Amino acid sequence: MKTRNYILCFILSVLTSVLFYYNSSKNNVCKNYSDYLMIHSSENCWYEPGYYGEVPQIVLRRNQSLETYYTVTEDNYILKTFRMVPKCEPKAIVLLDHSFIANAEMWVDKGDLSLGFYLLERGYEVWMGNFRGSKYSNTNVKYTVDDYAYWNFGFHEQGVYDIKSQIDLIKKITNKNDIVFIGYSMAGTSSLVYASLHPEHAQNSVSALINVGGVFHLRNMKGLGPDMANFFYRYKFLELMNWLRIGSFPYGTILRLIKFSACNSHPFKYFCIYLYQPLIGFSKTELDASNAPIIIKKLPDGGSTKAILHFSQIYNTGGKFRLFDYGLKKNLEHYNSTEPPLYPLNRIKVPVFTYHGSEDFFTDLKDVEELYQELSPQAKIYGHKEVKGYNHFDLMYGKNREKDVYEHLLQLLERIRFKN
Image (cartoon, rainbow, N blue to C red; front, side, top):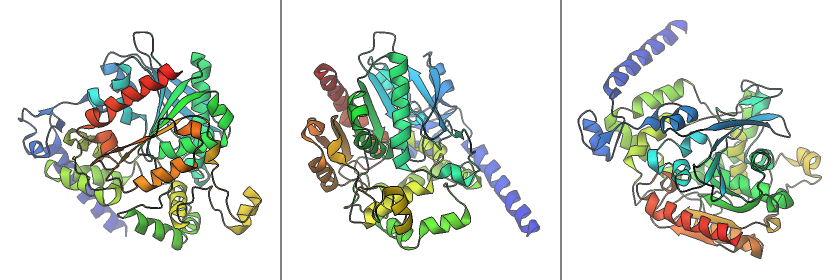
């Protein structure tokens, strides 16, 4: 067994060294996938600083100041939050929260079209949160990430505790109570949890919730998602993970090394990005090729298995957006009921706006319309927008996202600002 492991490690080391040699170049991103074949000499390739380093290094390279804050949630998770302040008087305060298995780097790692820098340069004060489990928020008063108990959370806890803690921090530092929340993917899910279970807190703190590719009912989910959800749900995934004492998806491991080494070699970039599409949707606009190495290098960060099981439960109960199902006995302990309750979306008192791609396999137009039927009149005053041809990734990484998403977002922020 030991001999086999040594041989495997040797092969992986050689493979990694060879691929690293071919990948090494001052240029690290290209305009088109075909340009990666000539990355050393193509005029369509360049050096993107956001590809390397963490949030502080990326921000400081642009001669922009960055403030770092720590908060402790009500259930003892320690979160790191970043703040960027424009040189002029801020138009408004925006809180950006990231998707599953990601972190705040997604808001600053794509140059001028990073949403964090894009909003900052247009006069917005930008706060960037990091949910529990990500590398910037991976500590707890009692547990470490190596403890199984640390990972006993999902998008519910990120909404009930993390978002609330981030917003309380911003209010304390700025003395403002009209924060605009912008969340991508699962952060949008968590924002609905927050605003439905803390309706008064949200009404007194937030002027709008903007969900980019938010995931909700899943009733009309397509692609590989339904098969995965059925597998996790029917084969007692939670019980298996409990037995194995596995609370998180692999990250920072040899699996990530293999993925980076194989996918970062230039001929395989497009193929590796294409492998995501049966799950997230087939793009008709094409993901920005310059973002491919960033996605390959930086995903995945830490994420809990409980979050995936919760989504699986929602799909397998006909799209019921409800709290986590622990089973009959534990449901009685948690909810005083054998069935988990629905999230009271009608209690949300702040406007909710949703961007969703027409090719997004996670969020179908019918699911968005169902969500808006459940919201109160005051929560749906801005409506929602379907972006034609976009899959789940394109909303944040598509090559035309500035024209199709960002410009509309700026107009929406102006409407929200002047309404207040």
